[in-house]
Image (cartoon, rainbow, N blue to C red):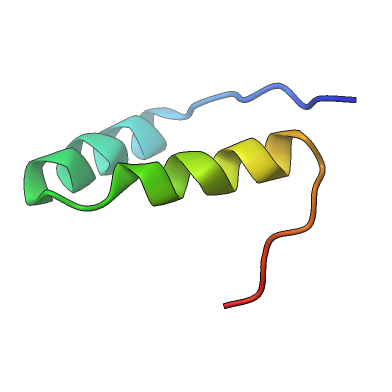
Length: 44
């Protein structure tokens, strides 16, 4: 079962700021993908 993502306005602003700072958004996308598919996150 896959979970739905609901983006808050605060998250949208933080995401925009992260893009502006040049942070790695692929890492964030992979984490969100794992969480929506209810998979455990890989260890650090």
